[in-house]
Each structure stands twice: as C-alpha cells, then as structure tokens.
Length: 581
Image 1: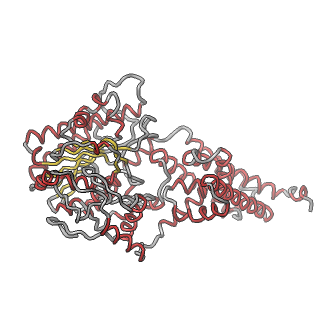
Image 2: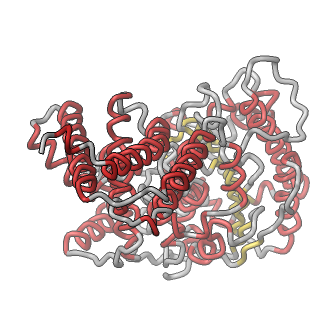
Image 3: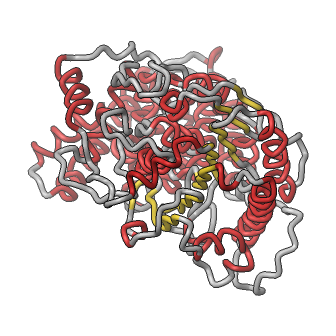
C-alpha cells in the first residue's frame, strides 16, 4: 500500500488528529514548566523537544483506550496540569521542583505555604487552564466519531519512541559538552545521575517531566537505609577525627568559662537576608540590628552562607539545634522529624523551652521539638489574622512572660514569623522609604523587617531593665535568607547575619570572614562556655577560633550527615553536665 493510500483511512486520520491535538495541548503546560525550572540550562528548541516528547510519553499509556473510556485522556492531562502548576508555584518560591516525598507529606502543606503559593500566581498560568479546558472540549466533540486505529497506535508509539530517544540523546550530548567528556562517558553520567541527583529540577532538565515524576514516586517507596561497612567507617572516622577548629585564643577559654552558668536565648529570625542590613536605608529599616552590628561588644558575623534546602525554616532550626547538615533532596521533617538527634538542649542538660508563632503541627514542629530535647513547646502565640506589624511583638511578649518562670540557667529558643513570605500584601507598617527605589515586594519585606526590629529592640530593652542581660548569652541568627525571585535582584546573595550578645569576647577580624550556617552550632557552644572539643561539636567550625586543615570536605560532611539522618544512627556523646543520649 502506498503511503498516500495508507493515510486515506478516515478512522486513522481522525485518530491521529485527535491524538496530535491532545499532545499539542498537553505540551503547552510542559513548555511552561520547562520555562520556569530549566530556562537557564535549556534553549528554546530543547524545551520544545522536551515538551512534545514528554507529552507523547505521558499520554502513551492511553493510546489504545476505546471510545467508552476516552475521557480518561483529559483526566490524565488534568492530573499532569495540577502537578505542573504546583511545581511552577514551588519553583517561583524555592527555585526548585517539589521533592518526591513532599507529594504525600501533609506537614508541609500549611497556611504559610498556601499563601505564598497563591501570591505567586501569574496571568500566564491561565494558559495552562485554557489548554486543559480545550482538551476536554476536544474530547467531548470527537468522542462520538472516535474509534481506535491499530495503524494509528503504531504510528503514535513509533513517534513517541523516536522523540524520547532524541530527548535522551540531546541530554547526553549536552552533558558531554558541559562536562567536556566523550559521549560514552556522558551517557554513563546520564545513567548514574538518575540515582544521584540532589537538585530536583535537575531531573526535569535531564530526564524530562515524566522522568522526574518516576523518580519522585520512587522516593515514596524507599526502604529504610541500613548502614554499610563503609557508612559505619565514615561515621566512626568523623566521631574520632573531626577537629576543624584550633584552640581558643589565649585567655578566651577562661573568659568564656564564666558563661557556663548563664542563660542561653537563641532568637531565630525568619527570612533575614544579610543584604538587608547593609542597604543605605538600613538605619531606618532596622535601627536595632544596625546598632548591634556597630557595637564592638557584640560579636557580629555579617556573611554566613545559608545552607537550607527544601525545608527552609525547618532546615535552619535543624542546623542550629543539632549542628548537622540538612538533607539536600527533600525536607527533612517529612520523614525524619522524629529521631534521637544530638542537640544543644541535650548537651546543655538544662530546662529548655521553645516558643513559636504557628501551630505545632506546621512543619512537624511538635515532633522536632521532642527530637531536639526541648522540655516544653509553646505554640500558637500569633492568632490567625494578626497584622504583620504585630506578629513578632506577640511572640516576644510571650517570651517575656515566660522568662520569670524558667529555672536558671535555662535555654530559651524564640522563632519569629513576621518576615515570612508572601511579600505582596500590606504589612501595616509605615516606613518612609525613598520613592521608586524598591519594588513592592522589597518594600513589604523591609517593612516586615522593620516590625521585627522594633519588636527585637523592645525585647532586649525589657531584658536589660529586668537585669537579666548580664545573666544571659543572646544569639540572634536568621533561619535562612530571602532572595530573588521572591525579592528583586538586589537580594541575590545567599547569606545571613548572626549576632552574639553577652559573650564577653572582643570582636576579632575572623568574625567578618565568610562562614557557613553549620558554624553557628560550635560557636554557640563556645560562647556559652562549653569549650571542650571532646564532646560533640556538630559539623561546623567555631567562628571564635581559627580553622585548621582537615580532610573532611563539605561534600563529605554532607554525605556523613545524610547517612546518619536516614539510618537514625548518630555519634555518641556524653556531656560533662548534660544528658546522656
């Protein structure tokens, strides 16, 4: 049969017309997904190839459906559209795709996430809705005359395989160009990367959206990690040999030992980018933080690299409480909120209280508070509907009421919430910023910062008036930065600041050097007088000491941390005056 005769078959033409239209409409959503999460690494032509190939692969299981079940096609397309839109919103907020385990984790879906997502909606998202609506209308119109075509099924399957092969080949070639390797070597990297990728948007860029979804679903059926002989060796080597900090400067040990009987107050600030307190308007926006940065009696660390991943706020709290590094491919709280983690509270072995604004169910806070060894968790200090201008004031007011009830010395952790995104809503703060100098999101962010700074100043003044300032070491640090694309491009640095009040230590040049977020854990231990390097010190380097050469690179430390978290096996430590866990 001649090719022209082959395609004169009416059923075949109708079949291919329907499926060609279905693929085109489905590819619209996939094009949007690639434009959002892979635009920097993929050309327009590559995105088009991926979108069409993915659409054909996604619809391939349904090409043999009968007329009776044809509505399964737009239903299947709608499911994909929902997943795409969720990832679009996630990428706009977190610059990545949704971690696999998060699809079935209720703890990460809360009012804060929902409000931030809804604020990220754009008019272009209507294109996705319109394409799915058009697919439903097309199916309704053609369903009566639709009939399966065996030749059509063969044509569709052949085209899908060819496009999928072209997609894989393009990815391998791009990998070879990027890494400067041969095609066979690039293919090995492409194959092995499916198991080793840490950034979820990397799966989309390399393996297409269906490949990403396969990997995401696979994550939900992982069996618990069992330690191999190599894993045990890595953990044991870390416990015995990780000593990244030099001895304290002369006289510092005896000076810091005076702090061992002091209270520890850790204030974790929501979403504070270090850039915000270096702006020309910083004295207006954050006068108290600016004053602390200039006070030589305060230890100020202006450039700390944020290390949080999908967990963001919960990752920051994990870093500060445990000294470990968070998971890179998922939010730790989804599966590992409950574990016998080493922690500040356990090392100090004193009454410890945690105060948060939201409900303890948000981000699995009830479980993490227990895992970190807190004696008490006080939640719901910020009622629903509270203006941003008042949120952090309420949290600090609750902390002030709690202070007289705590047995000294105590450990109090206060976590703020007022600077949490979205930044497109009115804050209730009147801040006379220069006109036309900031975007609307920047202005609202700085207004929220101003509200926090005012609440912080009132809190510190109250502690000073009560006479407790001299009895306490106060640490102020951001849980993570907030940066572009949530804010303008002036906030592109992934850095946060930290302050330590009441340590008695003079400020040194090393404090201005770049540090990483994990460095705060051993620094706090030093500041509170726990200077022994024999007990557990976390995975960072004390910012009060010089660093020493070590074979433990950051990637290696991250691997060790991940092994311990997933196996729930942690280094043993017995603090001199603490609790043995």
